[in-house]
Length: 554
Ligand code: PHE
Image 1: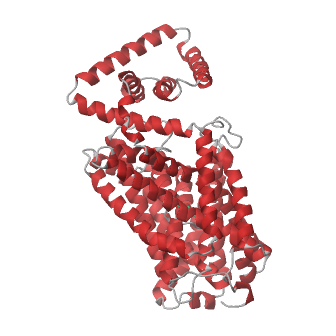
Image 2 (image 1 turned 90 degrees about the vertical axis):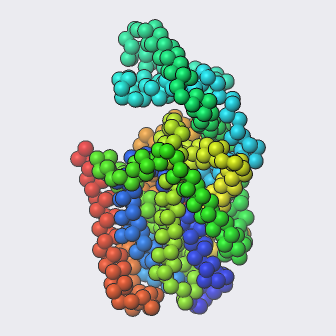
Image 3 (image 1 turned 180 degrees about the horizontal axis):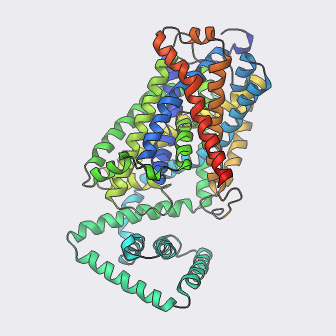
């Protein structure tokens, strides 16, 4: 590994350095925020099962293959393919990876910024101000829940109206423009669905709210239930207020990009290695504590059943694609991050052992986060008006408000979330930067500064997707944020992974593979080789072909 091209690129300070950095890259918002959120969105159960299959049969073998390419070549994704197989196709695969890293980082950093906002909120003890929620707001919420239950036989538009009402009562009352838009929308819904009987509906609504509130106040343990309800609604309103504020969301995103650049400019640094050693285990201990608390809720049994009991009816093609895409996202595969980190790895480290440990840790943490969030959301009966995007940012503060010293724990938790995100954003920027250093001869400083800035700017439309531009859905009916995440995570990462599998499975000489996996027994090598040649390409290719076929037929 010491020919001219790879000299002086730096390497990990220790063998554990690679392990920590690669785990740091894998473990991030994907585990703590995205996995629980999409599991929620796709109805849990069977989704989790499909995801676990994807991780074991596709993700793990590809992680070994990707780090193998990196270490063999000792270069960035484009350089690595140029060196190992100088054909245009493979070099383009490397190029696609660099572009994916660029786009992925742009929106990832936006959500990472949310963790900073929540760290600040914790310092200011914002989460304890739940008394601000009035009875009127509780009534509005009860109404919205009521309209969502099938028993009440409301149609979806009315359910949506109830939901809007609950939301608007605490987010938007001061915002005239939104109020107007809301009224206009409401008027339309009324016209369409009430056919000239708005008074009847309004009267019904007032009466319903009145009786719901009455029932709520008269039931057992009112004080306790009211407190929980206030906390629930309060954390929900905090999230809504925050993401609706473009300046704040953009500000934290830019700060996050700056932090990422500051670390990447220092090179494959001992700083990150050292920090990861303390912070990753702390995060783990914290999650264990939260799992124990979450399992203490009365409804925990039901919540767990929801997460783990397979319900194959809910399993659509989209859900399978999401599970597959997420297995690449969460393991940082398919766009050259693991390839790049592998390129700084010494020959004596075991690729299989490292990949196994990283994959296992990553999966464990994703499952822990999901258990915590499902149990909390369930126990607090949290309203989910954003399809689950805010779950991580509501479940945790609400839960910690019921714990002594909760404000401190919340602070620590979001700091750790921010750190977990930072170790991921670093790996993303490193892919782009290493390309410009190796292939274009730029200095690390120039590459980091120019590319970091460009990515930060590209992130701004994503930062606006939940507020100013929330109705701007230029592509396939998705906001910019959703469109980026959907195309990169669900299509391009699996596509990149597919090519990595094909390359290592069918192009890289067998002798090289055996050399890289020296020390692995024959059976394990054959199992991996079979997975990378047949299982992974069939799985990814199969899902792609099936979805494309379905979209043509439908
Ligand atoms: N794996 C990271 C996470 O789960 C995200 C990521 C994807 C990082 C791709 C690097 C490359 O949060």
